[in-house]
Length: 151
Image (tube, rainbow, N blue to C red; front, side):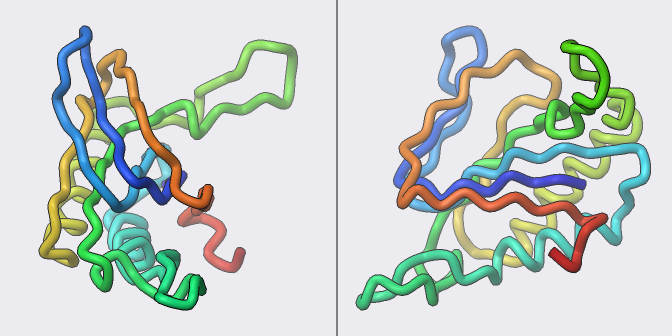
């Protein structure tokens, strides 16, 4: 499972020009699920995301977690995080999980995030053509891959 984490001052998602979700200060999570992913990946990532100290303290050092700052979360499905660009000019998405496998894991990470934080957790619309707007804070953007836990 791959997650692109963006620390934001605000973010929102529209589908067909209709606002469906928005947050204030917190994290925008772009989540890509592959065929090899399991609940173990979900649990590991959710814990890392909520506890990661990427928010600034009063001295400007990244020492605070999402819960420390009462940050909100916007979770957006993003199968293109599994793009393979090795050959040619058209990315291959063969590693991206089909909805039958991806949707339960996507719903699971949302549930886990809600359990781990008492703050607002909202989502995009799985499989929809979405317009995502954000004001990146920092900017702080972090890439995580549950298959590469050592990096």
